[in-house]
Image 1 (cartoon, rainbow, N blue to C red):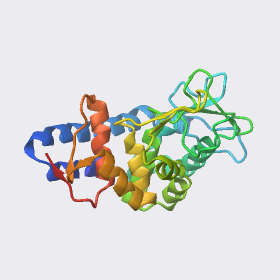
Image 2: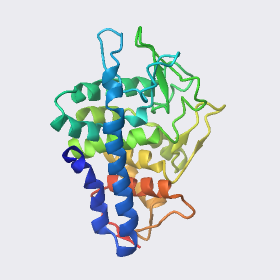
Image 3: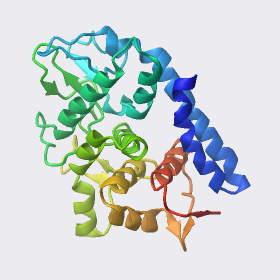
Image 4: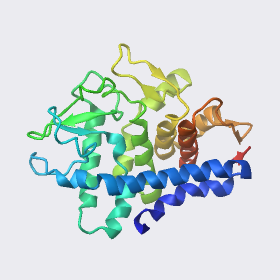
Length: 272
């Protein structure tokens, strides 16, 4: 499908690797393409089938064809937003307002990141899940998901995908959104370390560093603070200027590990 061929740019990383890693990287790139194809063919009806009743009317990217029938409201998962893919779809699909969906999705994700409806609004970070009231457009946590307000295993993908929208398309709304995220810089200045998971649903908001979810952190820093990105790269990704592959990480985590390195696209890396 021609509208997703541009997304194979992730496979550029394959050309920089030695033979033993080419298979891993190629599989990761192919999985990304399959995911995007599924997004188009499986979810295209979702965001355009439901016309929200807020004023003015707007299309919202909902979490599936079930997500406009939930009693709590319109259920969204910000990490399903893939602006790079949507911009490709817009080039060939004139029957749907993809650009309008991108604009509205940025607005929705910004509101979900502010989280003024919860006690986690001290840090601007996307949530795993949220609910939009179709009558007035207000936001709330999704009570059927205990980790709804957390920035964790869903939400980190939001930051990576928005960072890619800036890296590949120089989208100003991507930069505007990512510039609001200051918690990574603050944590680094305070402790010399980085958290890639923030569990706002738990007392004291524990935070952790995780191999796969660092893609959100490094992706963000690669756009907003290259000095911080370089320091994160040196501490968590490199050893003697060579990539160190994480031990005991599952394939999914390793895939996001490589995607994060791709965000640092102008860094010369020697892969073992």
